[in-house]
Length: 139
Image (cartoon, rainbow, N blue to C red; front, side, top):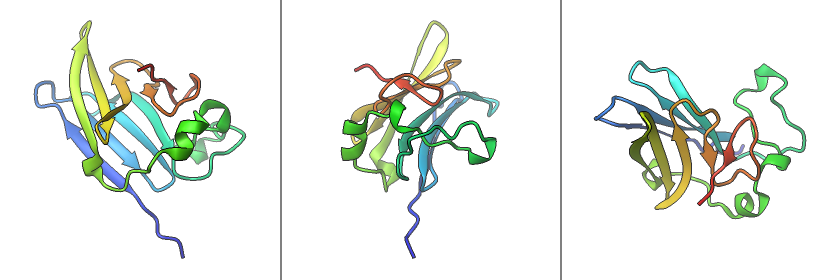
């Protein structure tokens, strides 16, 4: 029997009361930006832990959370990415612009994703092109 690896964490901004939930369910990883009331104000696909599929699965709501299909994944980067097994590898830096809260998500000290209040989806280093689950993170 295969061991299911998951990695979850919550990062709080004491200044605004906003938080980021890092959710790796053993199949897919997402990050969610929550406002001080606990409402999701941004989200982003981070990576597939499962095999990257050819066809999008987002037509069936029962498949949530959705994996990102090959057409939207930066395969070269995704294939060499070292999966996160310890939440201590993840850090969040808080900021803001034009009144919106911004959360920069770092993995092993490298900018990996960006969540901006009101922007759905957010930005991911492993996105190959903009899609419904993630936008390309420009470094």
